[in-house]
Length: 337
Image (tube, rainbow, N blue to C red):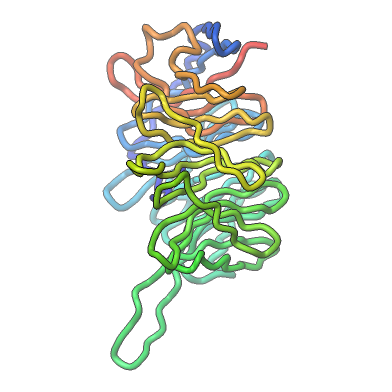
């Protein structure tokens, strides 16, 4: 979910418990909202595990960030993770999470930070991790000196597994970024093309496949589930306005938007439920319909908006809630069974 750079200055958590129940007659779902606590301007929620753990980042200056982790019960301020700055971007079902410390990608496992820069020296960032501890993200190619000239640094998508980093290449252009990976080690992201456009890709069987667009010139993939369903955003024909898409079996479907706004799909779970943003409104897409997320709970008097980032296989949704006093809060929405 532009490269993912989380921000946070100083994170104040207050476990306030469940705020209330909601009703969503049209969508058939009702949600409770748990307010995890306030987050300063620029702080982000980045990922959600299947057992309700949440990770994110927050700026402490213009150039440095601290990381945080909600373990399902309490928050853990990871600070700079032992470096000069830290971002956490993804978490798996084994409570392993990934991001970068300073300029190096890392994985956190069993209470320890492991710097994969030991095995992949160029600086970069890990954006996602699957349940087998395979990481994806981007790293910087170090230019080679040729006479008195140097080529500019370029980013390439990578897959890191078994202490080996694989450069996934590009779609013919100079740069690529891997944004997500499923448990079958299928990778999605976006890459520049020979025409200097940006297209969503699916990396499968050692090949990077161009997923195309909805008729526009640009597309980006943000998430993939274990069924191989891919979500993201793409320019549409004519206006090139951005619309959320679902890609399945070679077909990219336009998910539309709320009230004609631009939209982007950010995450998809195994049931095919999708969350994203349309204009300034969060949405849940299910059974062929896009629903305004703020209408799926009864606490509309407490929240101006709910901006989701991710959804897990229990249909829980994590994101940022904007309260009536314009403060940002980390929120976890849980459907009532």
